[in-house]
Length: 224
Image (cartoon, rainbow, N blue to C red):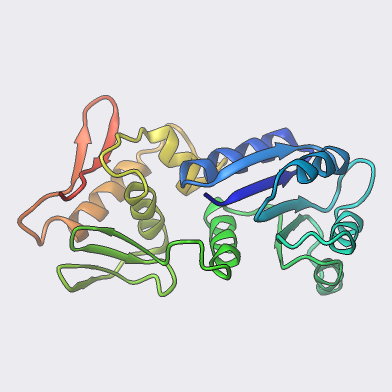
C-alpha cells in the first residue's frame, strides 16, 4: 500500500486530506511540523510527502531541500498559497516533484497524487468491475465495450464507488471525497449526480449495479 506523509499545520486541511486519501486506499499519516516529519521519516519509508510551504520552524521549501540533501527519494507534492510563476519555480527547484496552489479541490489533489505514484508503477491504471472499466490515465470509461462519456464530477463519483465495491457509502463520505470542504449539506446535488451516473452506466444494460440503500447511502454492487 502506498504510504503518504502529510506535513501541514492547518488541522482542518490536513484532516481533510487524510480522510480523502484514506478513503481511496492510501495509507496516510499527518504531522504539523518539519521536526515531527523528520522523526517519522527516520522510522518509516514514505512513498510521497505532501508538504505545505508555510510551516513552523522552517519553510517547506527549505525542508524539501534538506530532505533531498539527506537522500529522501520519495515524491514531494508542495502545497502553497503562493501562486506566481517565480514561486512555483522556486518550489520545484527546492526538490518538489509537483506544486499545487491553495485553495484546491480534492479531486485535483488526488489526480496529482495518482500521477506521481504512477511513475513507480505502484498505482493501478485501471479499475474494473466485471465489464465496467475505468482507465485512470486516459479517463475513459466503458461497459461491455461501449464507451461512456462522463463529466469530471461523474468520473470522480464513479471512481469513489468503484474503490468501495459492495460497500454502502453515505452522502457525507461522497461529499468529502468528490465535492470537498465547501459542499452544502442541504444540497441535493449528490442525488442528481447519482441519477446522471445511473442513466449512463446502468440504464442501457440489463444488469443494474448502482443501488440506493434507503436511509444509508449508495452502493455499487460487485460483479462476481
